[in-house]
Image (tube, one colour):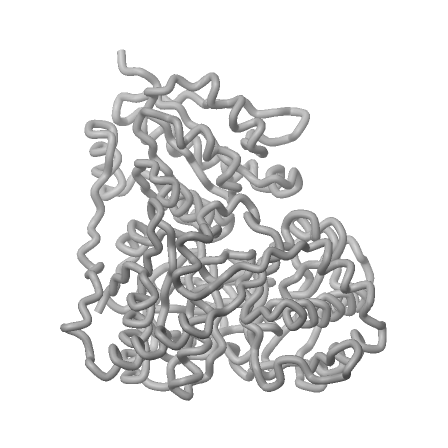
Length: 532
């Protein structure tokens, strides 16, 4: 008799999220169990449903260690993810597990299991843990079955990675390579400070860059506390907060206000976010930070509304002015203060390099990360492509949106994740050329993937359908990646996040991609070009 396959499910730290997502996880596990049974294997769950908690997820590192004590070290192990999960809940067990590991997600945008799995994949890659990864819409398609059979027989899966090629400066445009190298030499010489408001957001081990591999790029961390950010908020006057709010409304941004603090967005929530915005800029100035990242999800979430509106404003060159609290001097005038959402330091390095390099080219320098959330093929009008849903919780720079601030909307963050509310800065990303990228850590080495794409404008009904199938309160980008299909992207990408920046024309995007690749290589990263 074949030994059973052990299945575990990492979840959120927040009970409200786990409880709401439980049904989706159960449904996926039924499908997985049936798929394994068709291959002659049985699934045995490594931890039970907890009737007191109201869910069956591993919801803490403490519980994860307890679960792994009971799992045979050599067992075939499946980590099944239909939801967002905190990777550190199960990393201690996965790092020491000796049997084959398979991370597995359903192809659905409704609950972000794909995002959770990509985060876990990136974390395992950073930790140097051998694993395989797989995904499917219904766990019945021929490709899934073939890959599953490979894992069951060999303990590993091979994916098509033919779209990935090492960056070769000799085979790249000479002027772009020269520009990138000169930029990087100056960047490294001048040095920059990365302000980190507490590391390790939502268990994202993959988002923490060790100092010893970050510092050679010329970037150094200033470790800040979110308690300091909250304390600084208390020094911001109501008048100053109202000035920021009035600036936004005069620019045309609208807010979906209601009356219930529990379920609706309210003006007091937004005014607190305005205070957070002012406090963040003042702290960045005080410590000389060129870029900052706010964790928010732990600690600050119990004290203040969501930080997302703040993050979107910081990433935009045109934003509400912030004055020094004693001198009255405008801080960072005519500049964005690049912010790496969810304190993803890989995105922080990427975003800062992009911001400065794009400015040298005379391009709009606003850039942001998104979740690589979901996607499907779309055919209509002039479009016949696989169109990804890029979506971040829950703000992008207004410069990325159709109609800018006038096209921006503020919705309450979903209460299951954000108990104290707070506004998003959301809308639909404008059509145009993009350069996409990701910095990631692989067994102690900083690596960098970069490629080209473009943003398409879909009909309103298709956009609304995609929003309703994902998270309607969050900003959306309809992205087409050049020369990279769905499964290649999933197999290669080592993070839940992807960085995007616009370029004026296709030739500009091409030049910028190679210049940035050369810059990252000059900074010491191992660079790959992905796609055409």
